[in-house]
Image (cartoon, rainbow, N blue to C red):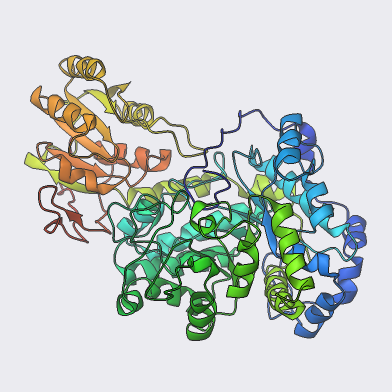
Length: 636
């Protein structure tokens, strides 16, 4: 997956985990007052924001002064302001040689500072695979370097620094930052207070690292169990419940000084095609769209959402031209702007994705997106091609400079609301004081405990007693760990159960265990008191299902933990106990261990229905289903 902004994977290698240099950490210190004043001198004269605030400026920015600022920009500066771009490296001015080489190959510049100087981009997006997110102090130093590089330009402007911190299976900033359960897990918890806590804490930590725009929350209503790209990134299948969670998370993020982004408009929840690789078609009628997909976006707009991200999908009921929504004027201007009344920032999903590139060339896509009503152009495969295409479209009259000014004003309003004209920098002390604090980590654990969902518990097998089921074998799927978590899940589960007083060992069998691997697991199962098996997207003919059936046949009690989609339970009819965690991040896996051990009672309920495996037209477990424990607890 190339240049994705919102997918859980990117096809890029993860960073090596080398610690940031002392110089990088030192870069996180607040620049001197004199430096800030010098860098922002032209802005101070050009722009005043009514009200004050350290994170989010109170009141509305002065519109006349914003317009005066736009009027002084060159055409090239205006074009650049529309782009949000990736860049390799842990430092804005001194990245590793491998990252310099990657930047030269893909962007034609050596560093983030050179990227800003050449193209005057309005934003940067951070990725783990681009080596932007090694550790919190380094991230803060990179953010400060980016802001400094932009403000030192003639008529320099503060930058929007963005990332995908959805939590769950999509995170760009990992440990030691606080990592929360993902959206579907939060949906299973059903608590808007927890969703707001996630946004508040995550937003505070991102802002402390100099990140001021987050491409979250996912506002898609996931009604297709086969959805390969959204799935557990959605809060669920009930549009009203999704809307409540979206609003709560938005308020949490934006209250902490980070622009939230509802995605992917007009709704990516009912597709069996991944828009990174193909061009999905949504067949919902206009009436169904109003009742289903539109509900969370309407709620987000009412809540004052700062930005909305487009989807690279066809939606014939909304626009029958065959264009993706990202390039659709009827959808982005006609519906989003005019019907829904949204006047905030509209950003594309990554322009490197196949869904937006299948019909038009990379030189046409950014121009058509702007004509459709987009404000920010995210991560084009070639910035040079895209930037020059927009510039030429203005020079030839296809786009007017006034059209660019509309989008730039929206972008500048957002920067002003975020307080970036007053204070674009962060400090090393902000990071130390805010990121991954014991209080934040404790809050994430508490949220996770309220999300674990117990779907099957025959004969009251759970919770396990240390007296009768002390020796536990943990087997199963070990998918690549979501970025920034410890993993693998079998190891995390075994370690957590051991800490809780059991004697647990881990044996990874993978997502497609061979017969030899299954034989080894079955033999090991005969020497323990119980087996915990982590499952990952089990299908009718999968080797995972065969392994689970063989483990059940040993006569040992088997507890299945569905570590991604809860739909696994439909394929496991012989298993006496099944839990759903909705992700395999550490915080969710450890919470499942506490539920298995009886330290907490399962409180989550399904935010999506689970259909029968033998008859998908029939519901096996409805939305809202979930078991809990009685008052009895085993002795500990």
